[in-house]
Image (tube, rainbow, N blue to C red; front, side, top):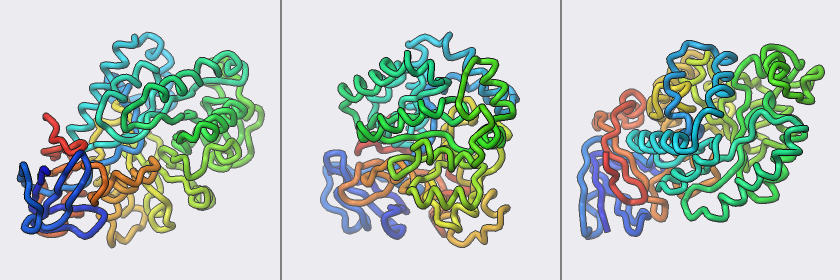
Length: 412
C-alpha cells in the first residue's frame, strides 16, 4: 500500500480531515482517515497543502488545445465559431493527436483526472484512450443536415462502434450532437436513438448564446444566416420551433439522466425545471462564456433551485487554460452578483467540480475520496488553517502541486 498524507484532506465524501491520509492499493482507495491511524505502508508520500479528489472537467475539447491563439483573437461567438470551418479541414491527423495529448498533459498538471471531452476528429481518440484519465470521450456530430446525414450516417456510426470495440481504457465512448443550430432535427433524433440503442452517454451544447435562442424560437438571427451561407438546410430554420432550446432539445431526445449539457447560460426558470425533471446536469464554463461575450450562467438560480451542476473549462480556443480550479472564483463572483447569500457556496463549488462532474458523467467511483473509488487525487498549495473550501476557491487556481492518477504520482 502507498499512503499519501496532507495537512488537510478534503474527501468530499465526508468532512475535511486534519492531518489526513489516503491509502492506495491496486489503483483504488483502501483507506481514508487520520494519518495517525493509517495502515502500515510500503511507501509514504507526504504533501503540503490541501488534498482533494482529482477534479472533473465536465466540458472540454482537448483536440483544440493547439488552437489557443483563438482565445486572443477578440472575435465574439458568431465570428469565432466560423473559424473552425476553415481550420479543421486543414488539420492533419498527427496534429489532432498532438493537440489532444497536449491537452491531456495540461489537464493532469492542473489536477484534472477525469474529463467529458468532445472529439471532433477521430484521430483524437488514440491519445485519449491511451491515457489514464477517467470519463467519457464524446464523438461529435456537427454541421449535418438531413441530406448530408444520408451519406455520413454510416461512416459516423462506424467511428463509434469501432472505437468502442478496441477501447480498454477508463474513458467510455459517448456521442455529442453539437447543437440545435448545427444539426437537423431528424439527424438529432437519429443520434439520440443510436445512443439509447448502444447504451452510451450524450453531451450536447445548450443555451450558450442569445443567438441560439433566437434561431431555435424563430429560425432567424446570425445562425440562420450562417447556415444559409454554408448550405445547411435545417428544419427549424423555417420559422423556428416556437419555444426555448431546452424544450426543443427534449423533443429531439437529447435530455435525460444519460446526458449532461454544456453551458446553460440562457436558461429560464421553466428550462431549469425541465432539466431537473429529466435528471440532466449542466456543465458551466464561465470563463469561456465571458471570453465569447455569451453572458453569465444563472449560477445562483441553479444552486437555489437544486439543479445538478458540474464545472468545465471548454477548450483552449475560448479559455486561457484547462484549470478547472480557476473557474471557482469566477463562478463565486457570478453567484454573489446574482443574489446568492454565499452560505456554503465555497463547498458547493468544490463539490460541483468533483462529485458533480462525476455524476454528470454517470460515474460513482470518481469525484470523491472514499474506499473503493479510483485513486485520483489533487494537491493544492493553499492555506491549511481555516476553511479548506474557502482556501481552495480563493487560491487553488494555478496552484496544483501534485496529481495522483490511478494511485500513481504523475510526473510534472
